[in-house]
Image 1 (spheres, rainbow, N blue to C red):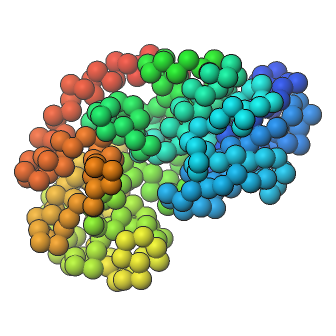
Image 2 (image 1 turned 45 degrees about the horizontal axis):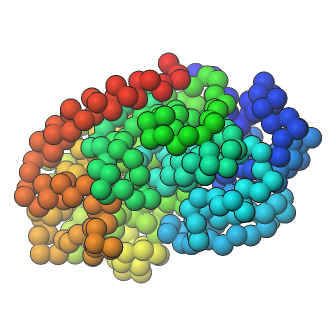
Length: 386
């Protein structure tokens, strides 16, 4: 297919009237670039079309310098000199003082297609804040790097809502950032005057490599499109005492711990003949995160065929296998605020309970069929691309 034209590119051409003469704010980070790797923030700052009056940065900061979970302070953006307000520090949504002087808010951040990614909720909370302030909200659309066809996983239980999941959507939702913005706004009554600058040339079946666009890691532990493909399943290891590969060159593509025998684990997982995937024994030594500076053994996940690969099935089968092989050493991470870390990611405590009861993964996955179908019917209303 020919190269996809991004919303942030069309903003300066066919859609330029949307910003002409406006005082704009921009929620963005280092992933907010065009096909020539020019930052939308820098292009707005240098444009005669509008005045860029404020920037707003999500988790990891306006230029992506911070690690996961690290609180970020307000700064003057080093490239433009424009005030850059943190939406991952004292507040996770812009307050009235941050919005002063803004008459149009833009959003341009690359998403990865998984419910746990916090940029989704930076967007939705900002939409609600702008609605309250009477400021229109304009999303510059970008591809879903793992395609816009497949949906998978349970719907989040609102009792387990957190900044890694605020709404009852599945783990893999198969929407672009612009499409899910519309879904959030309508289904959860955010009240924003919402507009989307659509892409041209994107198809729902496309993975990132089909777009013709360069990959800019949207966060420090999302180094490649291959990471995004496995992330909806292997992210669940964050809720355990198994390293999910943070602090290595292959976060989420490999997992392990000092007590694991990598060869044994790879052999056991490969014997399951999971579709489209294989496992290779590895040694790794994380520089940060769990087991920092300790030698771990585990496996690397190699996806052979994305058309049949199921990241959630693979992730839960892998987690179940580790629990069975190392029952004395395996543990769920210590609860915070009364809710297990795993349960925040899962959006429920039922999955952890099912795994503790050794419920077969196939039964676990099939138990979500009805709710997934319900979501599919809602989702269909917001599909903007074929």
